[in-house]
Length: 134
Image (cartoon, rainbow, N blue to C red; front, top):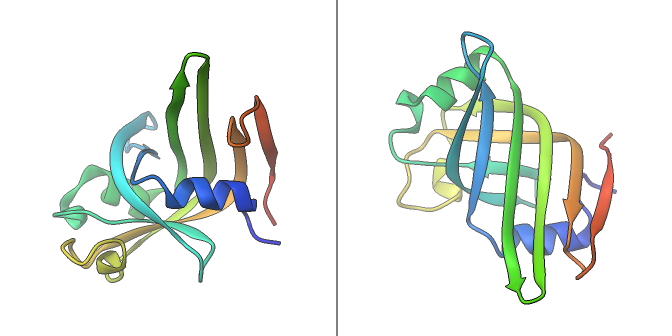
């Protein structure tokens, strides 16, 4: 079994924006919105962008691979229903692969290998799957 449940994969495939938290040079978290895609061949989250190699998040990952990534939304407001996936893992800053996220993006890529995944609200209820990966 991979890092994600089928419900989590389906949800991630339907979303395009998430929030990436990296560890800054000073040890403090740095959180930014990013475009992403679920990579079924690698069972990873791939993040691309414009000018990605010059960003703080890219430099942070080169220095410290520990990251967290959250994708969430509000499925309905009446009744209130929030759903999402939280991923903690290790990231790689790669010089190629970004165009697989979207052809218009730069070549550079951040690839997250999940070590822990938690989801909620994906099946219309509260908590979803929680657990360590591999």
